[in-house]
Image (tube, rainbow, N blue to C red; front, side, top):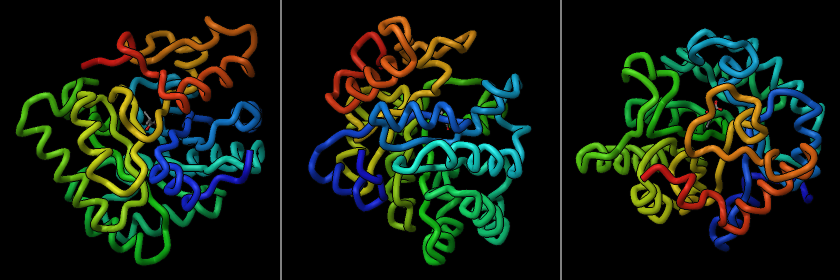
Length: 263
Ligand code: KIV
């Protein structure tokens, strides 16, 4: 695999070529993912759930994100690395700049932030200062306690319109990518077509430019995987083959199928 850059991922979008994204938290899995042809690795704060055994991502600290980003970076030379900014590490622009710098010094090529139009000023300041960043809309796991659980978002017309407007606003402010989590497939399709930046979906149907899964869901390790996730290890005889199958299905556009699309 050639070295993945933001420019390459943007070109993939404009050429209509889908790319695969997977979470990774350590060097060994990062190496296997790279060999499997997965373009983009997300050092997700889902590590709070799957590594630390917590019930939400809220307790995850910036130094833990930096530690896992360094671990993943040692396992890959070619994947594009995106690291989550944890809960309340970007509540104010100056704080966001300092914490993003910590993740980029640890090896992240991009940082990801959860939230809508309220983040526009922070995104603008980060973008102007040269920080590549990914916005995250739809289901926001860091706000799950306030939202009352892990639920599909954007099902009512007004809520769908709000997510579309937030997406446009954050692209305008300087976001370089967007993750859309647990929104209806039709809404994800509309947003993907409306934006120039690559859109990565999770539980958002088949029409986005990329798909991401939590690696522990994709490998059948999670105790309670979401309905949209697929256990690729159940269809392969090794982790390497399972990751290659995932990369292949995403790039060919056959994952998610209807069985793994929520609505
Ligand atoms: O932390 C994570 O794994 C994520 C994905 C759910 C997109 O943000």
